[in-house]
Image 1 (cartoon, rainbow, N blue to C red):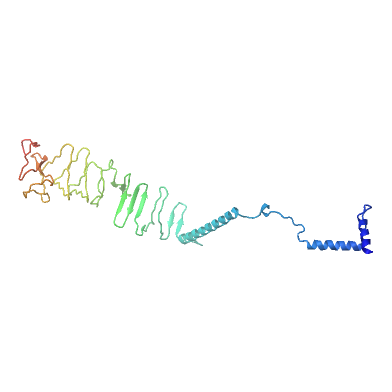
Image 2 (image 1 turned 120 degrees about the vertical axis):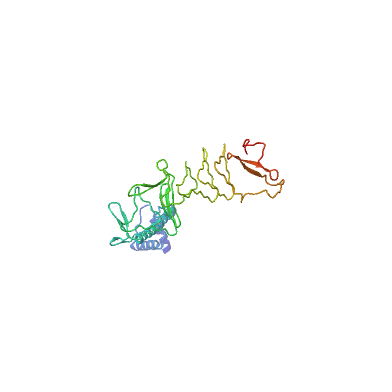
Length: 320
């Protein structure tokens, strides 16, 4: 019997006459089954979504790398700023009472109150560097020359010498009397060595006249080769003129060389052919230096022993 009755109720619930009312027990059983299924279903409400298509928040990828670089750069700048601050604090010595090493005045004066170690100083336009009224201004270079430079003019103070170089000229004057002591303006002032200066060392000089005073000699000395050139001739005048050379001396002129006065040539260092040896084919060609009565010099090729200055082309005329 019971299975047949259950089968008979099944078609009755699905009939078209309307829904069949369930008993309280059947509703409780159905509700229990639904809750049991719901509690055991962990995927309820889950929808699978592609994570790459979601809107990402925060700094990722290139933005994250850029943010890290900016942070590192700011850290480096902070370290450099700290180092500069420490150096300024140590050098200028800024304390609670102000700056211990220098003073700033309203007139623009910068006064150093202690010994200062500097490399290069660039004063402003028309600036003055000086010391106190009753104290000396001491400038010391540690194994290096002290150089004062303005444009192309440079004053270099070294251990063994002091040099001044300029492309536009220089002038020394007394600040009290304004008298010019030394000037390279040759159009206005004649060039004179300052008092106490005995020699002048130059590599090249262009002038109209070089002379000494009446009580001293004019000495021109060179270590290598000296060239004296004149566009319209060279005139050397003096009571006694002496040439001391270590090798050769060359006198060259376009027209003539005139020796006016007593001419003496020291033959101690000149080669001599008095030994009687005739020049061979491979020897140097020898010449004899001859002088006319009017001072004209000429040369004669030596072709034999004890030959004189006779030549077919005689520059002296009839008088030898």
